[in-house]
Length: 257
Length: 222
Image 1: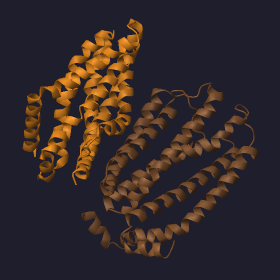
Image 2: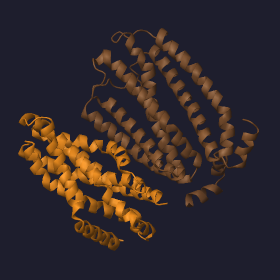
Image 3: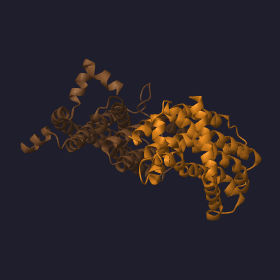
Image 4: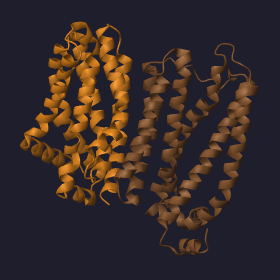
């Protein structure tokens, strides 16, 4: 309570509270969604063409390496979205901004979908490369555990009836999860590793060739924009539903959009 | 504050000893689950010695998880928990007292019985010793992390299944390091790394889990 009252007198926070109000969010996000959406479509088309046809063939893995243009951005997104959920959950808990809760709960299914995509594309790639659909390798296992964390988040949200309490409980769960993710990650890494090391995020020169890196980064940005568009659409729906008894929503419905 | 802490420990212990099933059921469960594996897989000595550490640890994990209900459920139902929230003492300290009792009642008996199960799984003396040390370091972590999950679902009618979804992924590091330590000591390797990790994780959880648990309780009881 204290943090909230203190924050409301601060001009910056006042600004944030103003624009995080459902009405303003609905108006602004409505303008942003087409931009994000169309940019995502353009980037994903360019990235796919570049990645599937222009980028050179890998000398070792042949053409089958090309699945990384889906697999790696999806894996990045799976971790990024969990971070978003934890951070917005914390914002919702501390400053009681309802919009942050909405963003967290709208992100969960998208994050779970990306995690699932990363696992499936990894399995499809693993069959010709490792000779098995699944190996108990550290990164795969950590990704699978991440999927479990997403499922737990969604199950908890579905189980609590009051949406406000559900959001706060889920925020705590997401924060606990985020604290645990590095621990899980390193313990699993230490347990068994077969997966190839990171090739892009090394601090020195990335060991991936620039002609493969460019489509990969285009795809990654495309995935991010896709997420931004979809999470806003979902959040807009939730905001409308939560605010259905307010005047601005009724006016909106009457005016026919 | 110390007064409240110790009197809560005393009260919870007394309650647990009046409902003996609270102590005995997780223990029986632990023993039964371990017994199922030789029946389901093979009574072969080498196979059992190989998978024994993992099986004993998975069974301990499940026993700890299934006993979490006793942590807050009855206090929630008769309103004691609400009074604790309203009391002048910091909730995280009271929660820590409850978690300690939960460990004494469910984790400790498991440690006492583990040499027996280690023997029937054909672990050697060194491995049994390691098993007991890892259980000593690991089972408090299970109670601490489990308390967070239990606090989140305490107000729900059917929280049992959900609790396992929330808590089991977070138990994975403990399982990995503990069963690996037991396996390594059986092979005659050094296990100090694993034990240091478990000790560090335990201290980490003692520090933060009560805070997260009390935040979760405040949400659940709102």
